[in-house]
Image (cartoon, rainbow, N blue to C red; front, top):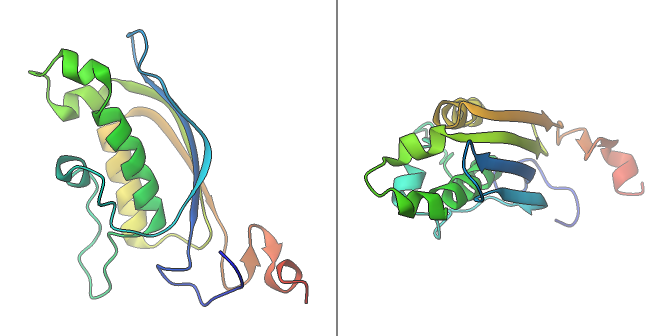
Length: 153
């Protein structure tokens, strides 16, 4: 992550943790104790999952934002859960609706409108999962510490 950079898709990071499980089913619990996500294309995530969270189509590509990458990682884990394989006739949307739990997300800069839309789409896919998020203004702070203090100046 290194030294301060002008906030951009490449310098903004997300920190996410979650604890979710399919409601009323044994097993299948997904827990992430905390991980930093950087921007990226989420190449390992199935296209079916990527279709669930659409970023706005703008001049600047928004589909690689770190917060979307984090939520796609979670949705991919949920879509790959053994419970889904046990009921192949069940749609992905129906499978995701059954999850409950919580997701905590921190973004190192103010979320864009596109990111807010991604949050809303996530909540539509997983209405029983509580999403909490916090953010900083990367122009002024780094993880809640004034930028000049974070760099030791």
